[in-house]
Image 1 (cartoon, one colour):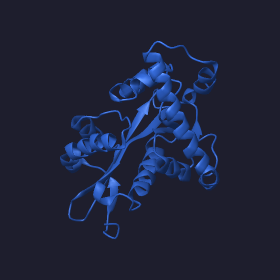
Image 2: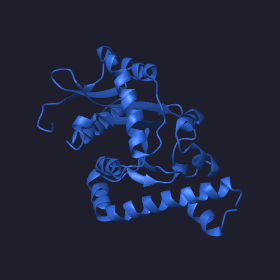
Image 3: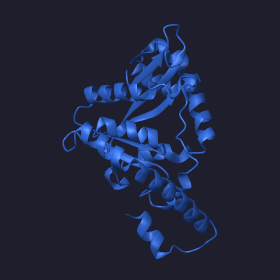
Amino acid sequence: MENQEIIIRTAHAADIKYASIITDEMESSAKVRGTGIAKRSPEYIAKKITEGKAVIAVTPAGDWVGFCYIEAWGHETFVANSGLIVSPNFRKSGVAKKIKEAIFKLSRQKYPDAKIFGLTTGLAVMKINSDLGYEPVTYSELTDDEQFWAGCKSCVNYDILMSKDRKNCMCTAMLYDPKDHYEPAETAADFKQHSKLYERFMRLKQRMLLRFLKREQKGGGKTSLLRYFFNF
């Protein structure tokens, strides 16, 4: 359906009717990928819509296509573009990138001085973020707002996150700092040059984190290699 016209805009009250569809697809998609995602209720999504902190994609006929929303943390010093989801019928059509561009622009308008960050397990999302000027960072550069991290409790990988004192997990952290950042063309070029390296690193990281968790669950101690690798 990539040739079908798609409308991407800031969500408004009339879009609350899509809230349950959005949350159901978020959960279903996470299960298919076998990765974690912080669960959100339809009420939470409806709240983001009414606050004008969400971007939605629909067809002219009113079919839901995609969605993403804004969360502010640390007294609005940090902003996350969260919950990016696209209907299975419209994936690989380029709509995810357009939604990310729209929510990034909305975030810059609403919170011009905030650092914008994201956590992702997907190489495709990493590429989109790089195209916008995000850079990979360590978890220590993200918000220390307890409410943000509490949102990870419903993620299947929460035990890994806590076992590492919130210093690392399956997700890769990325950050856009409006006061200190490279231009999108530079970060996009860097990602293109190192995309294979990022992919290999993410796979290695996930394999080692899973091994680490199994060792912890069995009562095994950390090796110096694991301590070095995961506490960087």
